[in-house]
Image: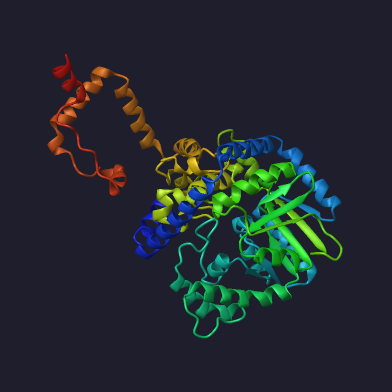
Amino acid sequence: MPAFPEAAARATRDATLRANLRHATHTIRDKRARTVAELADWEQLRAAGKAIKDHTLRRLDHYLLQVEQAVTAAGGTVHWAADAEEANRIVTGLVRATGEREVVKVKSMATQEIGLNEALAAEGITAYETDLAELIVQLGDDRPSHILVPAIHRNRGEIRRIFAERMAAWGRPAPEGLTDAPAELAEAARLHLREKFLRAEVAVSGANFIVAETGTLVVVESEGNGRMCLTLPRTLISVVGIEKVVPTWRDLEVFLQLLPRSSTAERMNPYTSLWTGTTAGDGPSAFHLVLLDNGRTAALADEVGRQALRCIRCSACLNVCPVYERAGGHAYGSVYPGPIGAILTPQLRGTAGTVEASLPFASSLCGACYEVCPVAIDIPEVLVHLREQVARRPGHRLERAAVAAAGYVLDRPALLAAAERALARSRRLHPRRLPGPGRAWTDTRDLPQVPAEPFRDWWRRNRA
């Protein structure tokens, strides 16, 4: 993937993409605003969610060990994965041990983050996505572009074409004469997936939360596909980021109010599935929990950046972001797009890469993301913090020299006044675009016009 500015420049020229994004994001955020407004104590809930997450992150070592003890006592097996490679090795090994060559999957950001589907395919194991939007993405050889609605960049006509052309290669073909009516598209997906649910022996999931006191995992969804995956197969493997822990059931209650209203604009999720280990005769007979680090402890060590680990993946910040609305999720070069991706990805992967170094600048710093975040992540603060880290890297000498020169002038009023007068007198000679390295700045914005007279001179003449 190219850096964000290049990827965004391409995306913003796609009129269909921009229309799809504008319609979808405006619809979701308007519904969310109405649903949140129903609660008089929304700000108190938001503060409670922030406090619970901060408390848990400060004592994460304690709660993770409590999770391991509780899950093990309930009949599950806990695995620890330091990075994506280790997590993929663990999961592929567990699937191979069952003798199966296919798995069904619940929608999971963590498994996308580590590239699990590709790792399984390399071992001859096929992973079938069962979330409707993820199914669209998979059939279309595409990538997710939104945390909650991975196929938000597709319209109904495009989805109909994907189903008609690609479903047969993955299983049951689309019905003859399929139209782009939502009910018909949903029925085609239901028929296609039903045979996979009924024959699958292994399922892979993530989790929205883990309750430390009992080792209970929680998945919230709107379609019911997740519950099919969580209950029918004999073996269930859940890959979960270590930051998804909450201490108690009372804490979970707070997030089960915050998450649905912030994500799908619903008062509660249609399907909230909870399971604790294994139970004879009910659900999978083998349960494996893979606790994933993959850069999270490094983020936890950053006093400013660690607040990104509060994220509950609601996607509210994407739906209000003017940059995301115009550029779309693919421009971010990560499974975590939008404002949260702009701060989470550089922390999980570091800022050495071209894409990662560009993401903290993929924002207007308008602050809308902070205003809607249900756990009060100050995304603009973290963006500025990460920009400072990027600016300290080698290769930014010209920028640092320019800032140092500006600081020198601004610290000397007489020199500043002389510079202002010189700029005013030469204003007719100023170019419309900056030369050299500064040219990129004026590729997408106008160079401000210099006034005919410096303000301080005007002030002396009119207010002396």
